[in-house]
Length: 89
Figure 1 (cartoon, rainbow, N blue to C red):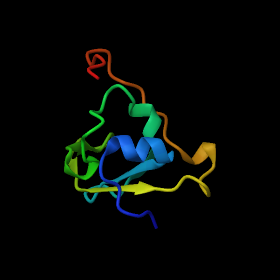
Figure 2: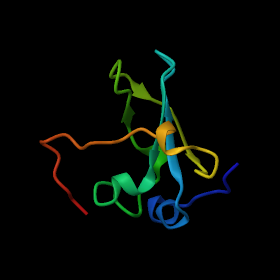
Figure 3: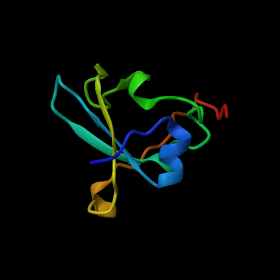
């Protein structure tokens, strides 16, 4: 279990992962927080952001920080930004 994380910058500094789970289709993905560096505002609270399921495109409401110690590299999802999305931060 992860202690309270104030914002994205703190989660990134701790080397945490982000798990997004869809209630509609049941899919679950774990991403490296560093994959989103430059795309998420450092002051952002990830639980308050809108995340969409990559399979069914419905908004996901279950977003959590996770410790990556026991997750193998093969268990992580590789995030690739869409072509239209440019780095903002």
